[in-house]
Amino acid sequence: DKICFAHLDGDMYTSIHDSLRLVYPRLVLGAVCIIDDYGWEGTSGVKIAADEYMADKLEKVVPLATGNDWGFHGAIIKT
View (tube, helix red, strand yellow):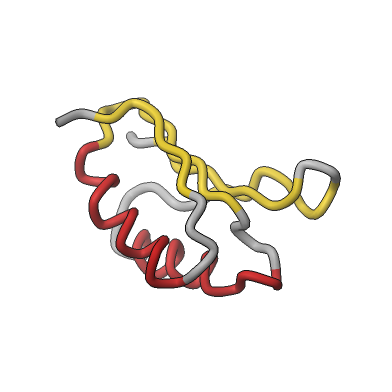
């Protein structure tokens, strides 16, 4: 029922939006949700879906990397 860590790797708008819709409400305070490929132009739907879903939330997606060897990721920390 409660989630303290999630790693979403859906690569597409629908899969990320659906995952956030199911996961976000179950995140406990202080929980971390990593979104793979957030900000990578090859999977632009990921960033669009995440930003759109989080638009009315207190938290925003924070970019973690910008194209180095680690790739592109975003994080949400539930407050």
